[in-house]
Image (cartoon, rainbow, N blue to C red; front, side, top):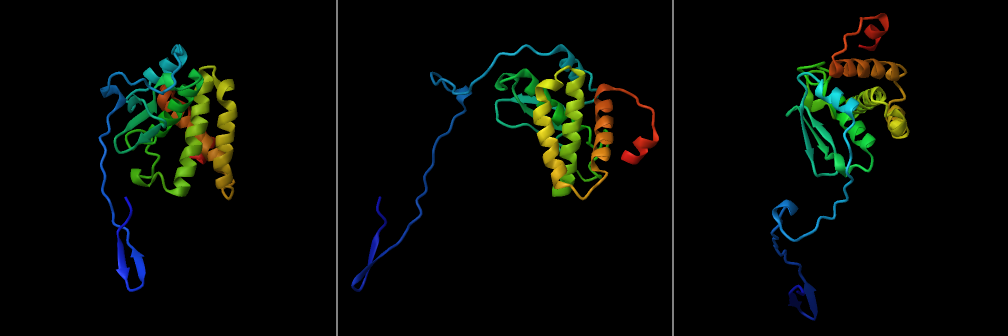
Length: 202
């Protein structure tokens, strides 16, 4: 539809008038006869990885959902992750889930890593450090399952990205690795002896 024109002497002035439209939107699961465009792959769960997840005492709620991202909510203490069959390789599913589970160890009811302010975790510098901890911890858990070789390239690039953003902190990698180890220990129920290096990384 053309916008109305208003005569102003010898010229015509065009005016735009907002037009409100609405659409009915349905979830694919609530329809019939419409094929899904979502490409899925059938995977067999890895027993070693499932054992780690099941052994996480008092862990967060994990919700597999048909979506394209994974996240951890400190407020809800909830991990949302794409379903296993959305990943082209099973190793990538567990690496992603481990990353979010490491985040969950920072909750105030566990290691209280978010400086007492869950809402501030995603501030630029704090978020960069937390992402580094999560990725190192995820790589540690993946290694325990024997899947480190399948995800090491992605993890190395991801870790390198966050280190580049925090170049001014010379102790960053040591501190992050120490906190990642504590997160892994919290998930696996491992009790480590306190050492001088642990005190430095706290």
